[in-house]
Length: 490
Image 1 (cartoon, rainbow, N blue to C red):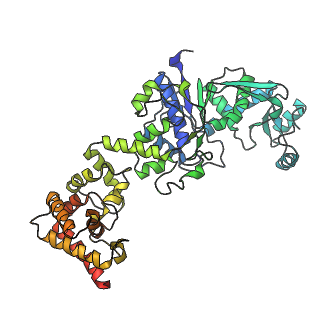
Image 2 (tube, one colour):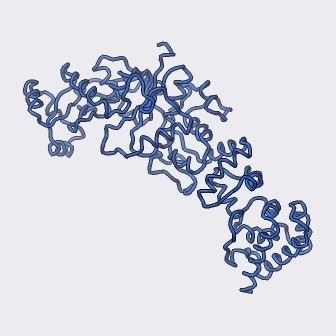
Image 3 (cartoon, rainbow, N blue to C red):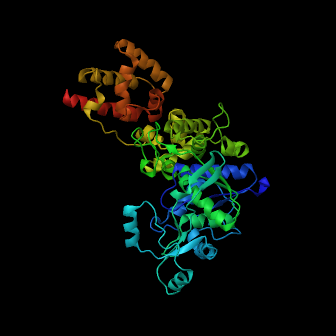
């Protein structure tokens, strides 16, 4: 095969948001196509109308493009094999199903739901009731408009062997197969037929997809062989497991117990949370693939040059959200302060805050090494933009302190800061260190109630710089409010 003729496809079903398992499959297809100078197609497989979710196709396209994954042909860009939405190709699928009937590889089935239900109660597969019905009779019943399906005539002896690129030969006993449906009575093809027909017509050379399709591999190979077509190269990716490897990651696992608020397996959620697309790409590509035992930092351009299917590991890969945070942190640290500010501001605005460029230029240096996602900036910075801090007296008093001790600290800090001609962080630090020594306190014991008084938080950006940015008036007002809270209960 001429490597430049490589053609792959990502063929999702529009049944909800794009999750990282699907995004990883799209990424691997994209990288393989780019590495080999081939083409990637996006095909929407929407023939299961019961699971169709309105708007999910549009969101899926947005999420993929946000990640930097693009395609050469698809529903939004067109191409020589249009349409790329499967439900618009049903006439083609029907004609291929009928061709299999005509050559004896499939047959019309008239079993109704009641009969099929009764069969399932005693057998684990269809019993072939309509398999050997006289052809003339079946054609008459179809012509009369009787409801029917088209079933594949599966072999019931011997074995079917299919080669997978990374899993090698996979063999199924044919007696385990049933005469599965190719075309449903509702006028839509079953995925097994539609995908194989479309793959052939669209010239797909490599089918790179999730491990969940291994159970259908024999069916797909049999359909292709029944038509007399050449099979694509099959490559089934590893399954993704929950953090810790305790079970398969599924759409129900949008958030985990370890990370109930910060992580999701859906790209849309990660985007809204403020993760960088490059960090997600770097994270996903290593869940089942590696270049070597050393390198772990990749961007999309790098990956387009080095990605290779032979380096895919078929073993299950546990989803590690800590690794995502790790890569995200690296991306943030590499960004300029103006880029970080531009990414942070939408999250601040969304929270009802009104940051200006001058203030952002002062704040970003304080938090750029502390945030993981851009959304984290809201927690770190919101108190800079609020008119007042809401506190309960108990918030100000530490576990190893008393109201009286805390009150003394705040009164002494306020007096010290009032005596400074201006709040510059070097002078603030010097004077408060001297005050801590004077009061026979560790610096942390002195600063903790101050931090709470001016921010309302246990954790804040560096306190001395924070006091300088807030300015004398606001700092002294907030400390005085905290003093009043304690005096009222003392």
